[in-house]
Image 1: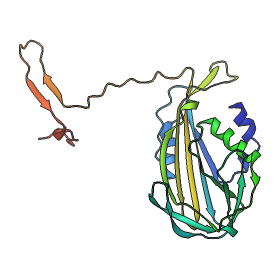
Image 2: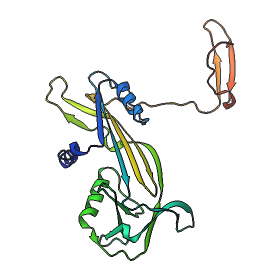
Image 3: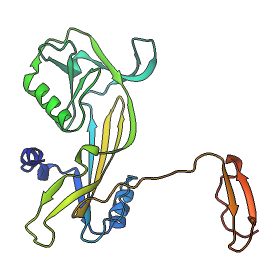
Image 4: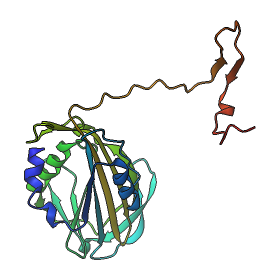
Length: 255
């Protein structure tokens, strides 16, 4: 985390597309996230705890608008795609990697890079992986007439597991350290022949002291037998075998 902080601290305040909130009430953060179109929800933090959330909203229009096309995979599957002429892209390569890095410019100057990869690392290692590519990539002639790449429609909620349990010390004697007990992310992305929009949200729940024990749940998720017994009676008052066909919200107990 020290590495990320050192890496980002001088730049993050210059990213105008980021907005953030911090609060001791989880519902206030959840409402803030929902008002911006996200569905990630933090649980209550407990005494002395708090939460933070941030939203990134990036909009990009291609310098040269592409055309609708089709992507055909090696096993002959067809997906909707975007076609761009060679004049709209630049290409790079990294020694030892046969896959080209395609760079596409946007009207505000951002550069979008695309590189095929069978697998990539996760967590912080992914950042190192991309940074290494940026350092090592070299321009190479684009020996094709056009490039076609997939359109994207993504909406995904994930748990940021690698950061759970991370502790950071404070100068407050009453609360010597905090620990991250919740870490959620939601990523939305749409990309077509005109450009793209990427919206991402992260939310962290932070406890004062050790993290809460993870709840172990026993779930009744198969047909089950239910009976009602009353002390002093030798037999149950009710016995029922309840199958999935009656598993629904009754609305109320009125009959």
